[in-house]
Image (cartoon, rainbow, N blue to C red; front, side, top):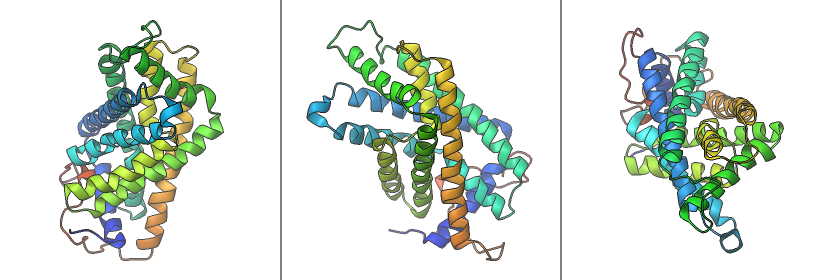
Length: 297
């Protein structure tokens, strides 16, 4: 099984970040929409699969199952190809530190991808979760699947938006994107789809099982719970969670992965380092071709 060494991953990560930084506005928005939708679909599946699992019987296995199923989201993002803000929080800063892009391009990438992720997540939350009836409401009859999914979603959302303090959200978000970006980083090492899926699966399962906060996932969970009628949850709670989750995710991805691995493998090396062995950069580049920088990288 072919794979890249860590120093080769670093070279591939810079190339991926450079391509992402120079994508056109349209590609960033559409790619962002798809990634937000993929994360939302994974969140919806995780809620549905884990709904009704009795904690007295299953204990911590509930969050383990939730995390294992939720890993579908990043698998779709990286293998099908799309633009996820949290992954870009590591890749684009690495390109910036290698002087392959600019601060303006980084801000443009993060801003447009954030907008796309938000619309995609809200689309799934409203139309595919609530309006389809997959997520029930507070009036659902006890013992039904609709009641179980509503209870499970409300439990997740209330924990994140109402029970956690702002500091807790921030710190959990740091841990979350450390793991998410490690999943992206390790997926760059693999040269085959099975290897990429394996690299993604364990870090994503871990962050969900630990109850960490992912800003794009929360763009699905919290609005879906609000629209389904979760008591006590308001937009003020949702926006505050997104703010602190986004800040923590940025630190976890940019510093603990992007800066850390730039320091380990790229600091002090020639700017025109040879391409990583094994050929392609990775599906994390969302299939973006190299170009002039006016439309696509």
